[in-house]
Image (tube, rainbow, N blue to C red; front, side, top):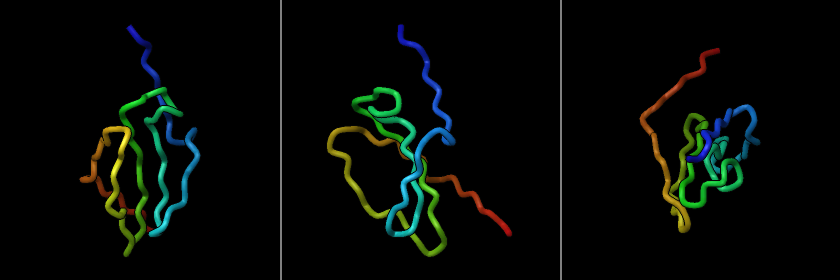
Length: 72
C-alpha cells in the first residue's frame, strides 16, 4: 500500500496566467508523482475567466462550484 502524500498550497509555486488569474497545480507528476491525474486551484479575478482547455495526458479533477470573495 502506498503512503498518503499531503500537499499544502503554500508550498506550491503560484503561476500567473492570462486572462488574469493565479494558478497552483496541487496534484501532478511533479508534486506527488501522479502520472494520469492533475488538480489545481485557480484564483480568477473579477471580469476574468479560465479559458477552455484540454489535457492530453491526464484526467482533470474539476471542482468549479466554489466561490470565495475577498472584501476590502
